[in-house]
Length: 122
Image (cartoon, rainbow, N blue to C red):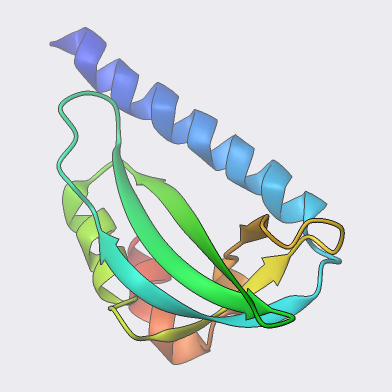
């Protein structure tokens, strides 16, 4: 059982570091409006729970789809985070200028009210 608890924290830290690197890389990318298609945080059987936010956006009339995955040590925190981004919610994503199929959702770009509780609990 001790190994399973360690797995949760190892995956959580891996996802945290990877997210920080992606966020740093995309800081100067242009922003675009997107719409949440679905959000959930399924219970993990091993490792940390991961909130999944699926979204769509248009660049030059072309439709693109993206996914934002964020790790949580607690399923409750992950579910709360996903609940703050319900289907139909407008969000902001950053889009790679040379390849608009690559995008990233940064919590800092979202309206404060939308994620205030989720960020506080993360």
